Amino acid sequence: MYTTYPQYMRQFFSERIQKIAVTAGFSCPNRDGKVGVGGCIFCNNKSFTPDYCLHGESITEQIEKGLKFFAHKPEYKKFIVYFQAFSNTYGTLEQIKARYQEALSHPNVVGLSIGTRPDCLPDEVLDYIAELSKKYFILLEIGVESSHDKTLKLINRGHDYKTAEDAIYRANKRGIRTAAHFILGLPGETREDILATANKIASLPIDVVKLHQLQIIKNTPLADLYEKDPTAVPLFTLEEYLDLCAEIVKIIPKRICIERFVSQSPPELRLAPNWGVKNYEFVDKLKKKLGIRS
Image 1 (tube, rainbow, N blue to C red):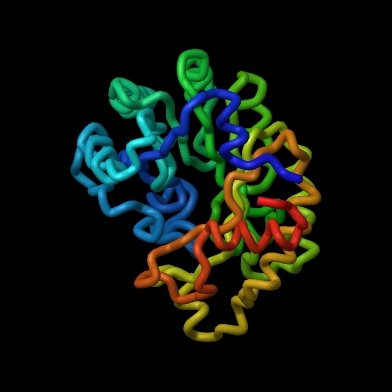
Image 2 (image 1 turned 90 degrees about the vertical axis):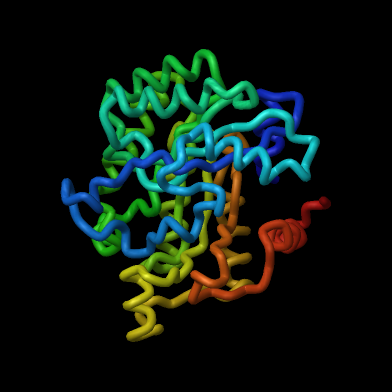
């Protein structure tokens, strides 16, 4: 009923490929004052940065630690380096080239996933990524989060939805594979608002979509708001979120891979929700709801 990530990746590789996340030392324009300060209200990069990604270590050192981390899975021989934390196209072209080339020079690395914001994609950077895409598997992962400008303003994104659409179309024009990130349950959004965003994303020329349930992470402005008044940040129950994802699956066309439905932050950093299910358990429940045989 939907295209899974393994199905998508089989178009490019005959063997299983694992991601290794690295921290490359970039920042974000809504952190350093260019468009704002404090970052997105939900963001604490520690919540999705593996323990082997240490600031101050080179990308090569982080890759080597990542290889050791996945050594217990001998079926993985080749890896994609995931530039995950912060905005990984937010720097000079020379800085960006140096970091990407360092990762791609590793003999076990066959490509990159590049996490970034839509307002950090000038034409010269997209031109460079397009050149890399001719030689390697490159997936440009763009944080869209919502199609509603009122929401983007509330969460301190520092850009509007039109900027996200523009970035995706400019990337697609250059033949760059793109993924859109989309958060379900942002403050102030109704179920109808969320489904409206899903419909807009479904119409975009993207290859992959990644869904995230809203999580309340410690040491964020969202956590401060939640602790003062939990009713200000309504959260989905597991069953409600399953129902919502089932609706979104019906909206997303099969040409777009749904890589992920839920994200998992370390329990010591997460205030809520606490559903007590792992990613694969959630997918099993969703497939059962959709009537899909595993």
